[in-house]
Length: 279
Image 1: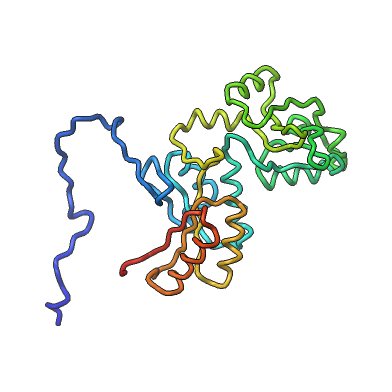
Image 2: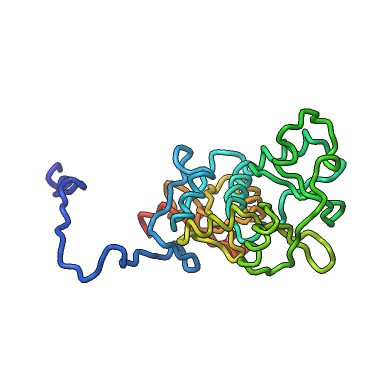
């Protein structure tokens, strides 16, 4: 019986790849690949959906370098969706639906918003119209946390229309010595935010993987348990690009049904499932 089980096997240390002649330089090598049918990576790497490996910081780094990070699921659906949001807000051509504050809110509440979302400025709006902007410069030395935002905000706004060219945005940021531009529609409504940080990051990481809105791409894992629908909905609202149905044994009816349901309900989100060793 032992003879029928034992057979020759190899470990990584047993294998040596011999070099051969190459007619190109490493810098000219194309290692791009497809993670899914519609998502191309610049480098063939994805970080694991483990709680010791991938949270929002790792996911940002992976996307900037041309790979993709898969956020683990060992957290509530709300927290996992917030992790997606942090990646999506880390770098973008234009921040769509930026975090805002009202002029009547306190400095304490505004600072809590900044802390929670890890941002340095908030457009101030009444209804949907911008009336100011509150940045770290406005509040740097302020001690009275009960003061209203209206008393501290910068009221002289520099705005641009949707679709502004990046060169024009850079010119305005430099001319007015500011770090943020409010994007305002023809009706005067706030539709987005452009930051100097995003423009500089685009230059620093030319191989970044981004979605159609210029935001970094990110994936998130979920299981087939009872919170799957709630978690999927939260991730979709946050703008996740890829959902990973993450299980030790993927060749099961539950996983196959979950793939079909997810693709049917969210056709614009890529779906990957595994592990699969048999099929």
